[in-house]
Image (tube, rainbow over all chains, first blue to last red; front, side, top):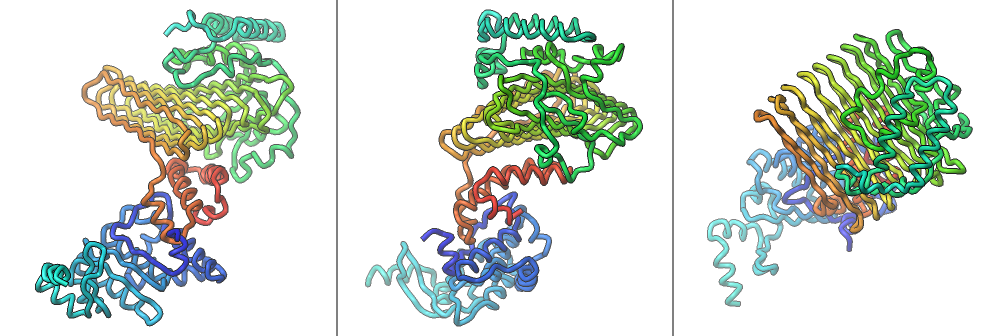
Length: 182
Length: 450
């Protein structure tokens, strides 16, 4: 599947390093994205008024400054603003499955809380999240249902949130040894 | 380089121009330029048109022009208001001079309500006047920049415009010169000359728009513009070329700048068989600033060449240059930006950049920034890039449900917008956005983004 087909099917990827795209307006991109997804579902596009209402509502989730909305995509954004923009886009696009790729990297604790609150507010039985992270810290704010340890492209151990705590204490070596022994 | 030894213009063609010249001289009852024309034609006959062995024409082959015997005297074909309605700057409150195949058309033009201190007339009218003194003013900006095409212009000029703004007069109303080219039975060449003079502290906006009315025309527009900016004056200058696919355009803009004067140029080459624009500005007094912006965007087998030259002659002069190009299919572009910092021009601040986007494997660009610096306390930088669309940006957009074709067009538009966005005059900016959008696939889809 092409990336755009995946997006229309309900997949959202929050990038580890969101790209700056000079000349492409943040808000117009988001409108086009939302309406492309709606179209693929056979829904009518939102008009400007409906769209802006939705945008304002979702912006509050991640405490985005409205000025950022009218700038070019991620251009001149700080690291934290870029990550918040990703979560904001996710909140508008309402995917079925969201993959958050190291969303916690490079975030200070306040920004991390905001991002986590955004994710938590979107949790529902209709939506799944895959958080990719190296650290426990993010999981203090977002309680995972399942934790999987990935090594060399394979899941080598699974558990619940306690597994993440154990990893934080003991590191990864024991898991790898366990997997090698098995 | 002296090209006399290697004259590419077939002798028959030079003879043709000579006989055309004799015909012109015979037709003119009053000609203040008799001596200038004769000297220019003699220079032209000695060298012919430049070959690719001449450095400034190395990447632009003018043989398609050299091999044609243009009619240089043909009167303009009839064009009515209905045909050009869409091409006027309708939403722009402006003075508008319309030229058909280089000839001023008073009926189609709008030259009423000129404020006091502003004089605008056709070059034909100025040349017809007794003792207008025009001969003394023509060529003053041109003498360092002569070549075969400017010589042909001098020899054959019959029309164009003379624009004079008195000292202290600032006009909000842009002056638009709209040059329309219509196909003729025999290919014709027109040689319009425009003379612009701004007095001390004057301010104005000039738009020169060259549009081909049809793609069958093989006509040549060989334009020369001379601009004199007195101390503390300011000119915003837009040149837009949208030639027909078989049409030829060669033009040169020649500027002389006084103390604290500000010249801002936007040169946009958007279509045409062969389009060459030279922009030469001389910063002759302290505080003079030149800003040159440019965009070329072509496909097919079209060819665009920009040659710019900025002479920093005295201390404390500034220049900034920003050119971008988008090339598709087998298109070819040339950018040569020369910044010449003379020995006494200390504290010069000169920046130059040229970025190119190649949308196909067969498009080609030859870019050459040139700094020649003879002063030792200056700040100069230049850079040139040639590249493709950014794959990570493309993937990012596609991950946001934007289909590939739209994402490509969008990124291309964004690249071009960097230059268009610098245009302050909104009606012109919007028109150019519209034209650029129209050149891209997925126009409708990306229209929603802007």
